[in-house]
Length: 287
Ligand SMILES: [Fe+2]
Image 1 (cartoon, helix red, strand yellow):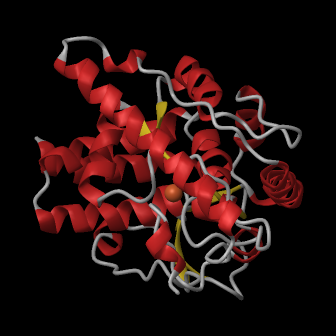
Image 2 (cartoon, protein in one colour):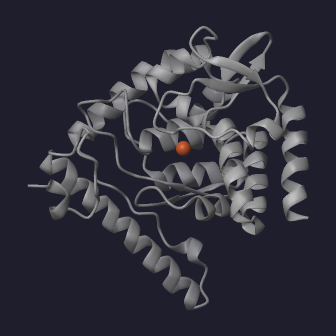
């Protein structure tokens, strides 16, 4: 029997939680509250009220979830210290993220908003590229609230709370990363389908998997790397990943495969210069 027929959230048969009933029930429950959030959001909008007043749902996490979070946090922490872009550890502290407790999206969002104005909004799972990228324009970052399956904490086939918090939210405390996100959002808002594809690639090779050079050492600012043990180790090692110089014109044409470990990544030698290039490209779409 296919367990997918009993559940709201479909999972691939090779997903570590595919046959775990309790895990799947929790995933369904979390999906339902995200759907309800957007119903309330739209109702508030229609009634002329500020939808930002709709509270982000608080999730009841299980002991298994907490164990997974602790394991992910503990394993990644020394790697973050070593290989993450400067400012990462400060961002972690500013958002008061520790291994002790799974952060609630609402709390992190509130802290983040007071720092860079970015808010986190709950989503059920992956959303369409145009919808996702356009939300960045309003300084809204769509984020999932479920936790990866406890049996495989080193890997998640889809973005989970560990990825959203340890990857995205911490980085969104930096002004240059938020500027980059908003630029992509502004361009996505008016982009053609071809341009959306280009913006997706730009987003992928920067916000998801970006590398940068700091005092002659390669560091990462990509959420995909920052939330995975394997990627965090290998991304900075040129014998495992080919490091290419950052170039917007090349990146927007570079088709990637999201299902494999990335064979090459792009290194920014100066964030300021990279932003200049990105600003140039994005404004050519929205101006
Ligand atoms: Fe992501």
